[in-house]
Structure formats: C-alpha cells, structure tokens
Image (cartoon, rainbow, N blue to C red; front, side):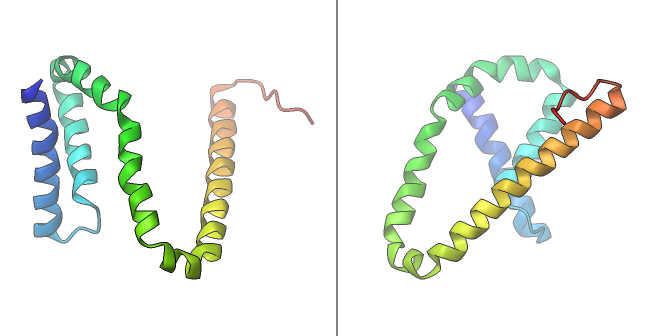
Length: 120
C-alpha cells in the first residue's frame, strides 16, 4: 500500500515538475493523472495491483471537500462581493454541461443505430 501511495504521489510530483518546467497551463496533478492513465493503459497489471489502494482513496473522497469548505469560510468577505456572478457562472456552466452531455449521448446513440426514446 505504501508503494501504491508512492506511485500516486510520484506521478503528481512528475506532473508538477513538468508543469513548471514547460509552462503548460495545466495543473501538475492533472498532468500526473494523465501520465498515470497512460502508464495504466500501457501496463494493465499495474492497474490491478493498485486497484485496492485507489478504491480506498475513492471511498474517502469526501474528505477533500473539507479544505474547500474552509476556503469558502476564509474568503467569505470576498464571496459576498462576487457571490452572485459566481453563482450565475456555476449554474450556467452546470446547465450547459448537462445539455452538451445529453446531446453527445443522443449523437453517439444515433451513430450506433440505437432508437431515440425521448418523448416528442
């Protein structure tokens, strides 16, 4: 399990290093996650080896919301100034994401030849 943590953190560190050296406008953890995904596609047995640890991470994913909540409380004065535009942006992007996802799903089903079952 410690080796698996090392793999996860090593890829995060590698992503951070690549992000800072190259100046790519992507966060280091995102780059590291992409590199880890590429490794898992290239060497599937590694994926089965770290599956238990990854499942453990996912079962405690809600703990990651604690720092976000603390950040909201810490910047509450700024949030009162930009709260309405921020809420509008969040609502708009959520509606847009759901709509694009639905249209993509419909398009893929049409390509696969699956009948459209949405009511007219």
